[in-house]
Image 1 (cartoon, rainbow, N blue to C red):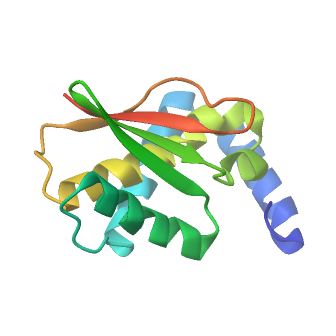
Image 2 (image 1 turned 180 degrees about the horizontal axis):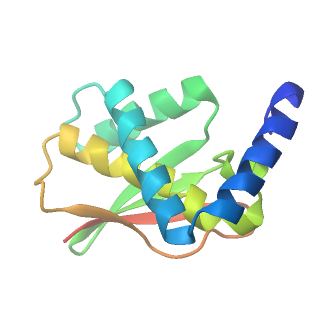
Amino acid sequence: MPAPQWRPFLSFLTQELTQNLTPRFLTQLMRAAGGQFARQYALAEAGTVDAMREAMNQVWGELDWGQVEIREAQDWLVLTHYNAPLKAVFGAENVAWAGAFLEGAYEAWMHQLGADSQLRMTTAGPADASGTMVFLFGK
């Protein structure tokens, strides 16, 4: 939950964004913001899936942005992000486009760590009731 001084600002900002921009544009905007975030909060070197998870959770933990679990599944890496403040900040009805922030951050981090630039991060589906989001990284 955002600090009290930020609640009205974020509420009105969200209202203006959703009234004036399309969901597609909002998604692109948040994805780009996530990429910028990842460049600002570059990860430590990580040569294994466990090391990637630890490096990502170091950043998320410092910012109180929840945590991520990563597992390998067939041709994908599956990233499950828990407890992101997106639902509290933007509202449940806006998590679909707001979650693109995480999608952009995770994709940029993967590429920073040396993943093939052809590989993409995609959202696996809508967030669940608790705001947990699942992302797939692969072709």
